Image (cartoon, rainbow, N blue to C red; front, side):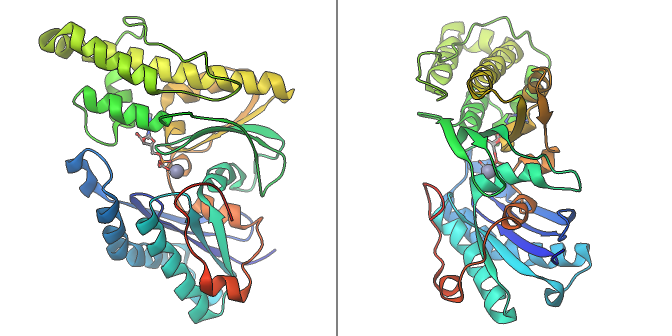
Length: 330
Ligand code: KG4
Ligand code: ZN
């Protein structure tokens, strides 16, 4: 068995560092959320990058000390290379390169989405491929067929907004704070999800998703109700809106499962923290793996988990490693 991996994740607005033991067990998983973005109603990329400059070093120190290891005990250093906000990613990549170079440690570059998939491999009882994986976050929504520990086959993705983005934008329309997903879920708990019929995009091809329509129909519903009535029915609006998004995710997941002939499902990404989605997936009847919430939202333990199954960069690559804002691993 190899030694511990230190991982850094800074693709968006969470400054994350974690140490994963060589056996895949989480020794520490530090997530410093940059609360500062709440006041702007969304993540401001330049502010996120500057916040990482302040928060990443303390997060790394906390991850090492909580795991009771020092840099001398590490086997490898892993970092999210992309996709994400380029300035934010570059801060993490620079930190990881510096630690690896200074300590003579191998560096592993990890794709953020592969990280969300690999959250399912954490722990002493990892969920083994093959399975269908739904990744739904603020920036991505995709369905993947996972056949091994180091890659996935893309079955479908969103053609417009991500599911988390739909939650965030809907929450904003309902006067809820950013990030909107958890707040909208809480408001929905007091509402009737049959009150409004928001559309589920079924005319998109294959296993792709579209969330632009549901967002627009919430906007129109609020406008048609008028200010006072919309305020009185916020919980019903939230419950119906949440149901439409979850229906869309579960329908496509079911379609992907049927087409694949597999009966194993895993999920990841911030939206996988949603209670309704979690219970609907559990109820599918397939063998399912639902990581704990702190491993669904952005975290560095999932990056370390992905790194366990990836090759190190060559010494030359480690020195010249660059981040990428979109697309997949290079
Ligand atoms: O994976 P993640 O932490 O960051 C990205 O890579 O984007 O996902 C963040 C997204 C946000 O859009 C947030 O509103 C959503 O996940 N989210 C939720 C819940 N918790 C977080 N959406 C619905 N219900 C939740 N409980
Ligand atoms: Zn993410």
